[in-house]
Image (cartoon, rainbow, N blue to C red):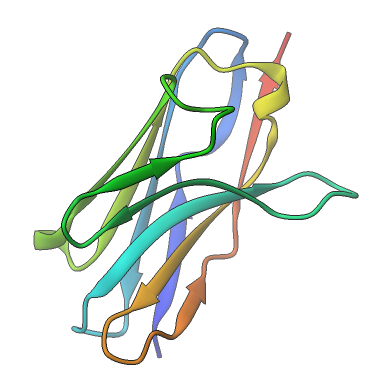
Length: 118
């Protein structure tokens, strides 16, 4: 069974940095796209960033220039999110997402809390 597991969340002051990690387990098949989404209570989950198998990236306008997504295909589908210049409005639960190659099945992690204090 394929599972995604996030790590690296926590509490940081405004202007600080955090690095989120996500590792896939349970399959040797690769993901054609991996990314990060976030959600705050009472709101829908929103897109943050994605990276495709050719390393092309996309970012939400709210994080562009501050967040950097990367992946390590040698480590069985690991994806990272470097978050710099964090703002209180970045506070949310961050979820890892992957679309599996061949089957196009979507997978989600359980989420990791990021809290930015002002």
